[in-house]
Length: 131
Image (cartoon, rainbow, N blue to C red; front, side):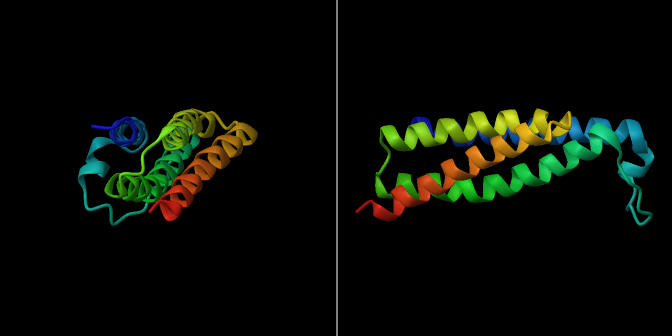
């Protein structure tokens, strides 16, 4: 398996870890009874758990953009040094994004988001230009 595909797998595992962290935080705020219920009654998360919830949503969105780019490059046989670098930048930026969001570091959070998004766009451009 290529390094780009490994990075995709690592990001999937990281996103699962973020989900688990958010669930643990939600359980402490809302209680297991509410989490196991149909959740017809709306309850709001607060603090770091609320920020982790939003970071998780953003991480899933990032995955829906990143995964097709990597799979397209794989299908075209277009992996190379530039795709590896872009995938590494994506992973590093996304791993840093979640704690920056969780701890309310808005300037850094935005910087990490831009880096991850730009790396994803670069992967699509490389895929588009590959034969």
